[in-house]
Length: 235
Image (cartoon, rainbow, N blue to C red):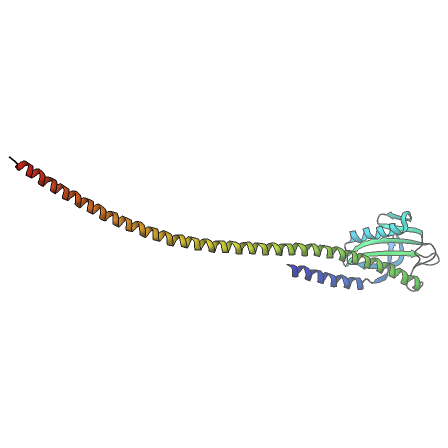
């Protein structure tokens, strides 16, 4: 069981590491409220609800009241992400469940241009890093949860192992008690056989005593009859 937990954890770590190294950001157009927009998208191999909640939390933590949500569309006006732009920008974002995971998409209005790989390559790289860092942070959180769960399972496995050992020791003690009891019973059987032999000998002796007593009675009866006979012959 312990080996199974460790193997599962190892497989998971290798899988998550692969995901973290493979969080590609691509340029994707998306229609938002009927308006096509060019933007960036990162795909994360985690549950969409969890990714959405984490994305909202990050945006709220960084930008507070400037983040607005409308039917799954997040918009932020006049915010500054220094790694992307030193001047205020406008961001529209959306989280979607995909067959391969969950996509986080955003479109960034830099003020003088929209973020794109060709037109704004420097800002593109910075925005790409922002999304990749977000994906990696989720993978690390997920890995921490998995490790904590694996540790719990390992502790449970160790406790179960100790319980099995304790049970084995108890069985061994019961076996030793059984052996001792068997020896005690065997000794009692030997003693019982000796007592039985003694009783049988006593019975045999008693039968002989009974026979001797009966012979004495017969002899006494014969003697008594003889005395009576002599007494009758006296004139």
